[in-house]
Amino acid sequence: MKTFHTTIADLLGATLLVAFTLATLPVTAEDLDFSSDESVGSTSSPGSPDWTVAFAPRLGAIVPTSSLGPFVGVGLEFDVFLPVLDKQLVAALDLSYTRPGASGAVIDARVGGRQTYDLAVDELGLALEVFYRFFPNDQELVPFAGLGLLVNMLQSNQDSSLPGANSETSTEVGVTLAGGVDWRLGPGFLVGELRFAYSALSHELTGDSNAGNVGLSVGYRIGF
Image (tube, rainbow, N blue to C red):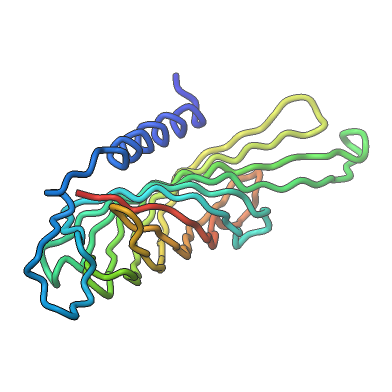
């Protein structure tokens, strides 16, 4: 039977492999669509991408809204540019992972006095989101903002100075809010994003807490 960590590794490995493959595909003149019929003085960039779908892997840092400490966060967003509003409305499926934690000590005479512990929470999130891009893709800078529904798969893991380890899993529903800007670079866009995600977290190891966080990340959006 696969463990929680094996499942995370499989999902992230497969999605990042797809994103990397697409990002390294050769770009032809037809893909870039260099044309000479643009009007003089146009603010459009030559070879502006007229995408239907796109991938955007990202890497950054998250700060939890609970008592857990900051940690690295990774993610992969799959975008579908809807055929409305000049393709400025986007439906997205977002996969994210982070593992914030905390360390401490408790004093309990029943177990020999002072005991130390290390707590970490695996957070594997899958979100269905809608974004509005404030300009078409023919601009150098494209701000965007969106929100979504989050399914957060959580596993709390605690190691202590006592023999053995404790683990607990659950799945919670939450929300996401995100905004940022795409900067035209090469065949795609360099992405800077600020993201907020929130769901409940109520394990015996964590108490009545939450799995919320604020993340700042950098990524690259490539499409076709």
